Length: 434
Image 1 (cartoon, rainbow, N blue to C red):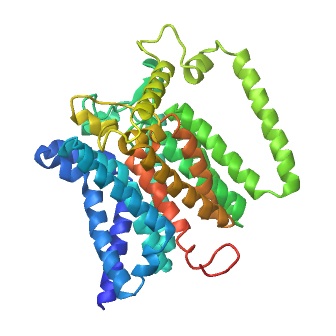
Image 2: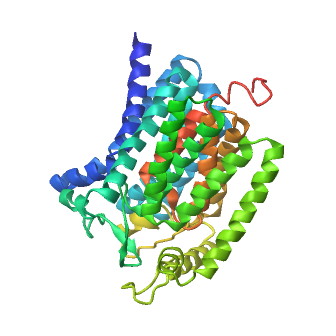
Image 3: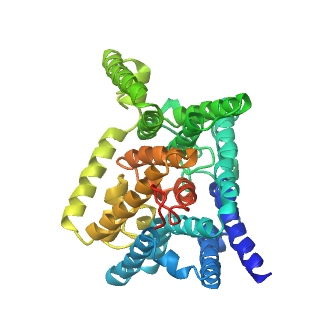
């Protein structure tokens, strides 16, 4: 009886987080404005629940005599080392409790959710379908609202619940050009929406390539892909568009036979050449100039995003070279806005290096690489292939954006990754027990 209570409580908490992330941003923003004294607690609801779930899963693992097995797993060990380094950095740099606390949540929440999902699915694999449904089910709400923003609702509809320049802008434009409105849906901005759409596009593409779907299933997947594509397009996120294309290309190339793969590669290379040629030929067309090159002399932006990205990358790289041990937790991103010297680095890898140095970046890359390796070995699974393909896309997006800083994007992808590889500890790709 106690074992069932522990199992259902821990699983229920993780499912609640997965579902709650769908409307997390607008709901916590509105509640924070209604109860400003409890704003930090409201924003940290998921991290608090993760802490409770961690305690429960540890108790369950001990009761089932699985604690040593889980702790002996390489991916769990890397998560623990990465988290431990963060706490050492807090003691070493002492950037202030507020900055360090905010930075700690941003840096570790997705890693914690990943390891919780991974351990729980290893212990209770029958919950896998429910978890996948919860993590992907939110796409109906997020993409549905994105379509409503695109076709039905006024552009500033989110302003009615507290969105503003002081909190989260209800919408953005391409370099302040009002002709190109960038929507948010229920995420923190257009770029996170583009990254989220990349995840959905990757998983749905894998389902179409791997599963023997009925006509109804194919139709539903096609509708989902159309909705995700429209949301991606309305985000005007160039990095996400590149990431989504890379995800689709990767999944298709992996899925087809070697003979077909040759023609796919030739066709893809030809399409790329044609696309580059057409882009160059129509360099000064309004859409190409604004959306692709962000180059319009009539725009109201003082500094276009191309210049901003370049300067941010240069600054981040210079800081990484000068600071091999990093600058401490909370020293960059939104956490640094709490302090007197905010630093914005628009690159996920330089972001990590700035927080925890070269060693921290190396550990993170090792962890991500280990997850990718396990997903690759399970690529016959539609879920694993979709998560792997979208992970390739998100890794590309991370070159131009701190893609894992957005909690919805990071928790959804890393949660799915934890579910997808959770059986790896039982047997390897040759069927031998590890």
